[in-house]
Image (cartoon, rainbow, N blue to C red; front, side, top):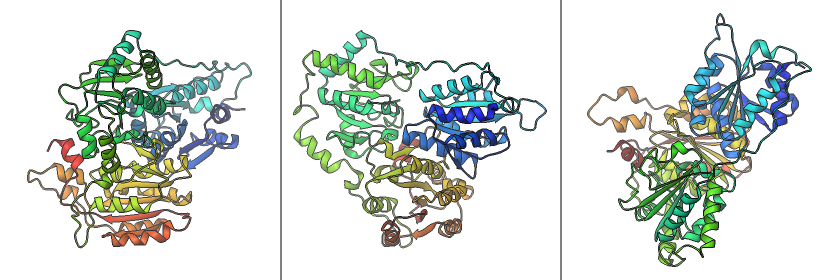
Length: 549
């Protein structure tokens, strides 16, 4: 057996089931070895698309996803998606061939680039250590890290020796536990609070996080909210108020601002989630729980930082409160009243908030578009959202059943990742209707991956909020600047989509959406692309807030 064969087989034996990528000479053999062992390889049209698909798959499945890349240019083509994954702590294992001879055209400092992206660089060091190196990389990745495993071309072509290094024994890595004094202080704050609100972020998606946080909320009388990336986590809970931040409904913003205690669970409490701090009243106490000690207080002053795992911290605090006889605030007081429950029932969803329809004769209001799609689409859906001026509309008007149904890749704020992300999410959640929400700019950047969706036979609904411009820039530069460089002629995107083999529909009014019904009424085996010509004369509310005007 050669090193290249051992790499593919070891990945499968460790639990990897799906790899994404574009195959070149450097990654051909270990990719084939992975599929020969039983893994699935999804061939994409561009390495950037492969990186985003792998990211989306990992987020929506909870599994380690593998990205297989050619050395040099294959690796650099994927960097934006790898940076997004790294910033989001996605368990993404990048297995990339590496040219080690400086005379090679493919030679670059791949490990240095990985460090610059915030990923963990590792290397298959020798034939003797190959299996152990792959094992270490996979296990680190499974702990919530994005890892770049470089495979030197000359090493992978060597035979595997008999005296190879044994893989290290698997160790259960215990998450840090908050100090006892800190837990006592946290329990005191919960007992003193009359209007507590819990905000669960990306870190709360750890195993058992939802249940542990909800139990503690019930003990302490807290309302439950999430950051955008964890949207849907508490959907089944009576006291869920949905998203905190720029996408908050008026009710959620009112209740969060009125809180006397806000607890961020694996949540950065950054400008997006706290509206530049406007959701935190001056007298409100703030607690933050995170496994990264450097995250505590990074974005804003906090009254108490708890270094520990979200599930473990919530469970320990619940035990402490129970031993004390429960929190002071009981159901029926503070925020958990019949009046608040009634308001949550009728005002929690953006679809319940009235608005004035600004549709014109030839362009549809994006709120009308989004609300009507929410009504038409099955409840079991997985929604992936690209970045751009439009992104608040699908993020708030398209409801999702849980946190594994909303894929929000915004840590790097790059447009162009949404379509590929949705393909990865679709493969991770095959029982749900996949929806990709894109702006026309981001969609056209990634349009080649329509071919991948068609080839895979995915029932993918692609909704393009098409204002024929880079809307974020148009609505940001309002000082009379020439905007010709960020606006475009109308493109017949529906015809482009049909050329890839998709069904397609151009939508300019609510009535045009009737054309979607025949596709929904069957079991679709190819994507549907909706080119929605949306009104374009104003910026979205979240964008105005983000830019401060």
